[in-house]
Image 1 (cartoon, rainbow, N blue to C red):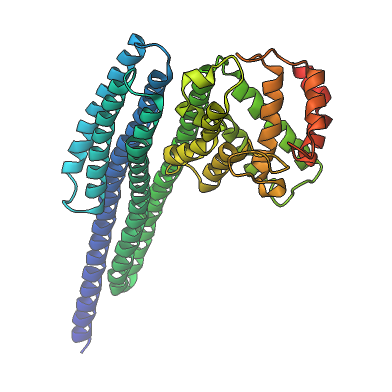
Image 2 (cartoon, helix red, strand yellow):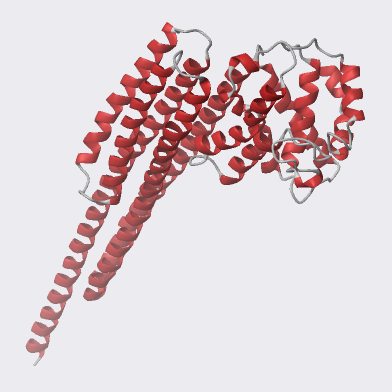
Length: 440
């Protein structure tokens, strides 16, 4: 009887130990598989992210060089053309890497289709730019602008949207890996319970392994978070520099040095900060809103890119027909902003930038353009931009006028309160007189 019990106990212990060992081995296998899976997905995500960000950065540079070439008055700009050719070659080389990554993807998958769309759209974009370069000096600026709006800007918007979608998919892959790790952990725990004391050891070992894996996950999650924030900061910086560069180039066509966009942006910021200090428009004036308006201000005259040099640099007064053409730059600016950054920037920022471009020539009394809005129908950002833009234009020398003194410019702005300008905005602006005098 005792011998029988002893044998039974040994059998039970053996079975328990065997179950525990199998549980431990399976648990270790699960941990190794989940680690290999996560590392594999990490390498794939990093490779795709680097490819996407490299293409985005090269396209920003190419777009900037292309606009520089298109708006210059020289018939040939050899250095700019060489730089364009170098950047185009870099883009095509990156597309080869892009294609190699695409070949390793599952045919017909969402990512493979997006990669193919990006590849095709960028090639079309490069070809269309060759066409528009050949139009320079042959076609009118209006025809070139129309070609760009109908062909180039939609392609860039499509490319940017596809690149953003790829970035979103990469982030979802990280979440998917977390779910798969969790699934393996649940399965391993089931086998670990079978062997009593040995199973307890298995649980302890599983805790140790899980702790190590979770630490590893935490480190990688931290890495991706830092990389994501770094990339967002980098793209925002590239975007801001590109926008400021384009705005400077547009201003330089009318003889400006580019300081106009910087000065008006600074004045807009001063007025909005003064308003926030006094508690005005509290429901609108968040720190983010002020930042968006300040960053968007340099784009207020982006639509002038479609206006011919003949009208833009005319030393005398414009004819009624010429003025009607000039007025089209406001609405054109809003459309160009949506086409260029509509797919890559926050919606609120894009809407503010478009409102500034569209409505900064509207007047408080409703006699402005392009829509004849009046009073508070005009967005706040455009009402502030109007004061900053007119004041800086008055004190600056232009091809058609001499600069006005600060005293006369302040007096004119004050007289136009309630007619051209929002009286509240003018009041805030006049409170900044001493500060503006000190900065001149």
